[in-house]
Image (cartoon, rainbow over the protein chains, first blue to last red):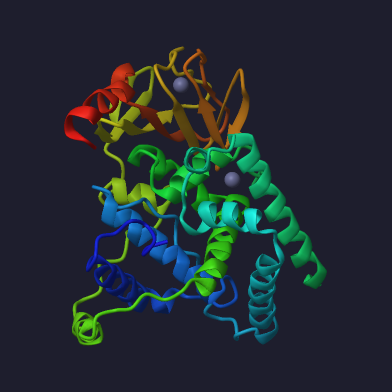
Length: 146
Length: 210
Ligand SMILES: [Zn+2]
Ligand SMILES: [Zn+2]
């Protein structure tokens, strides 16, 4: 996402440092009951990339209330980690063109219309490919859901 | 509290996530995400998929001094946290309000408004409509995205309660009427009225090679 985004040489370090700093400052907000670490970091990186490119920072949703009174729920944390691992495994089982469409949409955050321009495929094909890929992922995930 | 029934369209959430949505609309999306578990889940599930790709991505080689510079940067103070949600206003709205309560301007008929931001891409305002009062019928020169923060309103497209968003396009002429009970407070983003705004960048492209 960050490094494939056409950044000039030397800026990659700045970007990595910037994201690591943001993760460092927000680490206290990470809630393993609600998010897997990779997805959480991805969200921070996505926002930092946007803010570096924009004049005004992207408006952010409210931070979720902290569940201070609750003991860490190991089952819930493990379940979420499992879900993240199975998601990664399910990704590995998708057809290559489905992976490419998903990667462009979710990893590079390219709007679907741009993917269509880039690949020369009609927008409908791209959308159905992404949908198919996501459906298969969801199907894989259901197998592990309680 | 009634369940939220009117959500952010897919394309708009995509654009928000990609950072391509005009600021005024981004604030409305962020405010909706603060109130709507369903869209929040869509948003975070997309980050989770992004995270799965992140784990599979090959690492980049960093310069040798990157680590030292990083450790030095850690000593810098943390950025200021965003203002907290207050009353009916989510954090993103409080940010636009500068952390203070709204400073309403009377519009006649008991209707009040405060313009929060306006730039060449669009404008964002808060509207206050007393129960049973109607906003004068109006059309749109572009797109309008309205989020209910308190009370309710209804128009030809249906009834909208706290957390609901209405997307209105060019052709629609509508007359929202506030429901009974609490005054209706809405957050509304509109495109800039410049119909040729899409044309200018296209004309300048070959000249400036952008
Ligand atoms: Zn929603
Ligand atoms: Zn309107």
